[in-house]
Length: 208
Figure 1 (tube, rainbow, N blue to C red):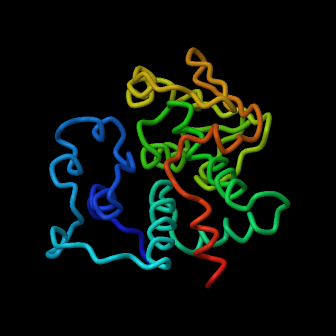
Figure 2: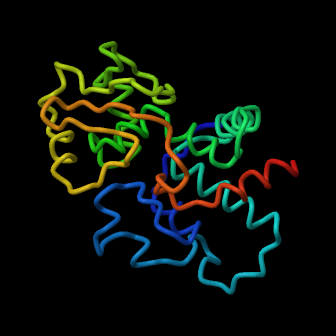
Protein backbone atom coordinates (compact mmCIF):
# COMPACT_ATOMS: atom_id res chain seq x y z
CA UNK A 1 0.00 0.00 0.00
CA UNK A 2 1.38 3.41 -0.94
CA UNK A 3 1.83 6.19 1.59
CA UNK A 4 -0.93 8.81 1.86
CA UNK A 5 0.24 12.15 0.40
CA UNK A 6 -2.95 14.20 0.78
CA UNK A 7 -3.69 16.95 3.34
CA UNK A 8 -2.76 15.89 6.87
CA UNK A 9 -5.60 17.95 8.30
CA UNK A 10 -8.10 15.44 6.90
CA UNK A 11 -6.76 12.96 9.44
CA UNK A 12 -7.52 15.32 12.33
CA UNK A 13 -11.00 16.03 11.01
CA UNK A 14 -11.70 12.32 10.50
CA UNK A 15 -10.63 11.44 14.05
CA UNK A 16 -12.48 14.41 15.55
CA UNK A 17 -9.40 15.68 17.41
CA UNK A 18 -6.19 17.57 16.77
CA UNK A 19 -3.36 15.13 16.10
CA UNK A 20 -0.75 17.92 15.78
CA UNK A 21 0.63 16.54 12.54
CA UNK A 22 1.79 19.93 11.24
CA UNK A 23 3.61 21.32 14.25
CA UNK A 24 3.06 24.98 15.17
CA UNK A 25 0.42 25.48 12.47
CA UNK A 26 -1.96 23.31 14.50
CA UNK A 27 -2.01 25.97 17.22
CA UNK A 28 -3.00 28.77 14.84
CA UNK A 29 -6.48 29.95 13.86
CA UNK A 30 -5.89 28.90 10.24
CA UNK A 31 -5.72 25.26 11.34
CA UNK A 32 -8.23 23.37 9.19
CA UNK A 33 -9.66 21.57 12.22
CA UNK A 34 -10.49 24.91 13.85
CA UNK A 35 -12.38 26.04 10.75
CA UNK A 36 -14.01 22.70 9.86
CA UNK A 37 -14.09 20.33 12.81
CA UNK A 38 -16.51 17.95 11.10
CA UNK A 39 -15.38 14.86 9.21
CA UNK A 40 -14.15 15.32 5.62
CA UNK A 41 -16.13 14.20 2.60
CA UNK A 42 -19.57 14.77 1.14
CA UNK A 43 -21.39 13.50 4.22
CA UNK A 44 -18.99 14.88 6.81
CA UNK A 45 -21.53 17.27 8.29
CA UNK A 46 -24.29 14.68 8.42
CA UNK A 47 -25.60 13.16 11.60
CA UNK A 48 -23.24 10.52 12.95
CA UNK A 49 -24.63 7.06 13.58
CA UNK A 50 -24.12 5.31 16.88
CA UNK A 51 -20.74 3.61 16.79
CA UNK A 52 -20.33 -0.08 17.50
CA UNK A 53 -17.60 -1.39 19.81
CA UNK A 54 -15.61 -2.47 16.75
CA UNK A 55 -15.89 1.00 15.23
CA UNK A 56 -14.68 2.67 18.44
CA UNK A 57 -11.69 0.33 18.61
CA UNK A 58 -10.88 0.85 14.93
CA UNK A 59 -10.93 4.61 15.30
CA UNK A 60 -8.62 4.37 18.35
CA UNK A 61 -6.19 2.25 16.33
CA UNK A 62 -6.30 4.57 13.33
CA UNK A 63 -5.80 7.62 15.53
CA UNK A 64 -2.71 6.19 17.22
CA UNK A 65 -1.18 5.02 13.93
CA UNK A 66 -1.77 8.42 12.35
CA UNK A 67 -0.25 10.31 15.28
CA UNK A 68 3.02 8.42 14.81
CA UNK A 69 2.74 8.30 11.00
CA UNK A 70 2.89 4.50 10.73
CA UNK A 71 1.21 2.29 8.16
CA UNK A 72 -0.87 -0.74 9.07
CA UNK A 73 1.67 -3.52 8.49
CA UNK A 74 4.35 -1.90 10.62
CA UNK A 75 1.87 -0.87 13.31
CA UNK A 76 0.58 -4.43 13.58
CA UNK A 77 4.19 -5.58 13.97
CA UNK A 78 4.64 -3.26 16.95
CA UNK A 79 1.49 -4.70 18.50
CA UNK A 80 2.71 -8.28 18.15
CA UNK A 81 6.06 -7.31 19.67
CA UNK A 82 4.30 -5.59 22.60
CA UNK A 83 2.14 -8.68 23.25
CA UNK A 84 5.22 -10.91 23.22
CA UNK A 85 6.98 -8.86 25.92
CA UNK A 86 6.09 -9.24 29.63
CA UNK A 87 4.00 -6.40 31.01
CA UNK A 88 0.96 -4.32 30.08
CA UNK A 89 0.59 -4.62 26.30
CA UNK A 90 -0.86 -1.15 25.76
CA UNK A 91 1.94 0.59 27.64
CA UNK A 92 4.57 -1.54 25.91
CA UNK A 93 3.08 -0.62 22.53
CA UNK A 94 3.41 3.07 23.34
CA UNK A 95 6.97 2.55 24.56
CA UNK A 96 7.92 0.96 21.26
CA UNK A 97 6.35 3.82 19.33
CA UNK A 98 8.07 6.40 21.52
CA UNK A 99 11.43 4.67 21.00
CA UNK A 100 11.36 5.29 17.24
CA UNK A 101 14.14 7.62 16.12
CA UNK A 102 11.83 10.00 14.26
CA UNK A 103 9.66 10.36 17.36
CA UNK A 104 12.69 11.01 19.58
CA UNK A 105 13.98 13.71 17.23
CA UNK A 106 10.55 15.33 17.51
CA UNK A 107 10.36 14.93 21.30
CA UNK A 108 13.81 16.50 21.71
CA UNK A 109 12.59 19.58 19.86
CA UNK A 110 14.82 19.26 16.79
CA UNK A 111 11.78 19.14 14.47
CA UNK A 112 8.38 20.81 14.55
CA UNK A 113 6.50 17.59 13.78
CA UNK A 114 7.12 13.88 13.42
CA UNK A 115 6.86 14.24 9.66
CA UNK A 116 9.62 16.86 9.69
CA UNK A 117 11.66 14.67 12.05
CA UNK A 118 11.30 11.74 9.65
CA UNK A 119 12.67 13.90 6.86
CA UNK A 120 15.67 14.94 8.96
CA UNK A 121 16.47 11.30 9.67
CA UNK A 122 16.05 10.15 6.07
CA UNK A 123 18.34 12.92 4.81
CA UNK A 124 21.21 11.83 7.07
CA UNK A 125 21.01 14.80 9.42
CA UNK A 126 20.87 12.67 12.60
CA UNK A 127 23.41 10.47 14.37
CA UNK A 128 22.98 7.89 17.13
CA UNK A 129 26.01 7.33 19.34
CA UNK A 130 28.15 9.13 16.76
CA UNK A 131 26.99 7.08 13.75
CA UNK A 132 24.64 8.34 11.06
CA UNK A 133 21.25 6.59 11.06
CA UNK A 134 18.76 7.27 8.28
CA UNK A 135 16.06 4.78 9.33
CA UNK A 136 13.11 6.56 11.03
CA UNK A 137 11.91 3.29 12.61
CA UNK A 138 15.25 2.68 14.35
CA UNK A 139 14.49 1.85 18.00
CA UNK A 140 16.73 3.70 20.45
CA UNK A 141 17.70 2.21 23.80
CA UNK A 142 18.43 3.64 27.22
CA UNK A 143 21.73 5.54 27.12
CA UNK A 144 21.70 6.24 23.38
CA UNK A 145 22.82 9.74 22.40
CA UNK A 146 20.89 11.30 19.52
CA UNK A 147 22.54 14.28 17.87
CA UNK A 148 22.22 16.50 14.83
CA UNK A 149 25.14 15.65 12.55
CA UNK A 150 28.10 18.05 12.55
CA UNK A 151 27.56 19.11 8.94
CA UNK A 152 23.85 19.80 9.56
CA UNK A 153 24.01 21.99 12.66
CA UNK A 154 23.35 25.18 10.73
CA UNK A 155 19.94 24.03 9.51
CA UNK A 156 17.53 26.85 10.20
CA UNK A 157 14.57 24.48 10.62
CA UNK A 158 16.31 22.81 13.58
CA UNK A 159 17.09 26.07 15.35
CA UNK A 160 13.63 27.46 14.62
CA UNK A 161 12.07 24.37 16.19
CA UNK A 162 14.28 24.67 19.27
CA UNK A 163 13.20 28.28 19.73
CA UNK A 164 9.64 27.09 20.21
CA UNK A 165 8.79 26.55 23.86
CA UNK A 166 8.14 22.82 24.12
CA UNK A 167 8.55 20.83 27.31
CA UNK A 168 10.88 17.86 26.97
CA UNK A 169 9.48 14.58 28.28
CA UNK A 170 11.11 13.32 31.53
CA UNK A 171 12.79 10.24 30.03
CA UNK A 172 14.88 12.42 27.70
CA UNK A 173 17.51 15.09 28.32
CA UNK A 174 18.44 17.68 25.71
CA UNK A 175 21.53 19.80 25.18
CA UNK A 176 20.44 22.69 22.96
CA UNK A 177 23.99 24.02 22.63
CA UNK A 178 25.41 20.80 21.18
CA UNK A 179 22.10 19.81 19.53
CA UNK A 180 22.06 16.45 21.23
CA UNK A 181 19.80 14.44 23.49
CA UNK A 182 20.08 11.33 25.63
CA UNK A 183 17.56 8.58 26.30
CA UNK A 184 17.47 8.35 30.10
CA UNK A 185 15.16 5.35 30.41
CA UNK A 186 11.85 3.78 29.47
CA UNK A 187 8.79 6.02 29.94
CA UNK A 188 5.84 5.26 32.21
CA UNK A 189 2.37 5.68 30.74
CA UNK A 190 1.71 8.87 32.69
CA UNK A 191 4.86 10.40 31.21
CA UNK A 192 3.73 9.87 27.60
CA UNK A 193 1.68 12.90 26.46
CA UNK A 194 0.07 11.06 23.53
CA UNK A 195 -3.70 11.50 23.57
CA UNK A 196 -4.75 7.95 22.77
CA UNK A 197 -6.55 4.99 24.30
CA UNK A 198 -4.05 2.19 23.82
CA UNK A 199 -6.30 -0.35 25.56
CA UNK A 200 -8.85 -0.03 22.77
CA UNK A 201 -6.06 -0.73 20.28
CA UNK A 202 -5.16 -3.92 22.14
CA UNK A 203 -8.83 -4.95 22.17
CA UNK A 204 -9.07 -4.28 18.43
CA UNK A 205 -6.20 -6.58 17.53
CA UNK A 206 -7.23 -9.18 20.10
CA UNK A 207 -10.49 -9.81 18.29
CA UNK A 208 -9.00 -10.00 14.79
